[in-house]
Image (cartoon, rainbow, N blue to C red; front, side, top):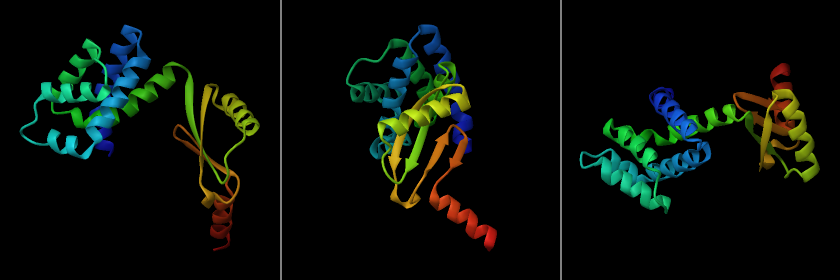
Length: 177
């Protein structure tokens, strides 16, 4: 997986620079997300790996799946990726692009896994606390997973904050073990 990320990083950086120059980080981010979803489909992934693969046809399929015409600069970007047999890297490129965009916009996407859904007040207080800690605007996404038992596990960038009852019990078990 890290090899794919290494291969995808220069394309993500190039896409980010092109999008920033065009003043369209959101549009490029959306186009990359759609393109990544298309190439992740099993049939498309198989076709991209075959010798029959044709860059222009691949771009046409991606554009058709997007449901609207793609920006000409974005199509040229896809063409460069296709000419180098790198279209299968679009999911990784999209992910890295999103990270670069969040950093440039001083935002951080945070995933909170809790046993029960957070109410509006809890979400607000948690967002405020995380904004102070990370000095960024927080986009909070709550997932419910009963296996955490109580509390929450917070995934913020590369950092994981395990405040779940399950995590505490695991740490207690290891300390007694």
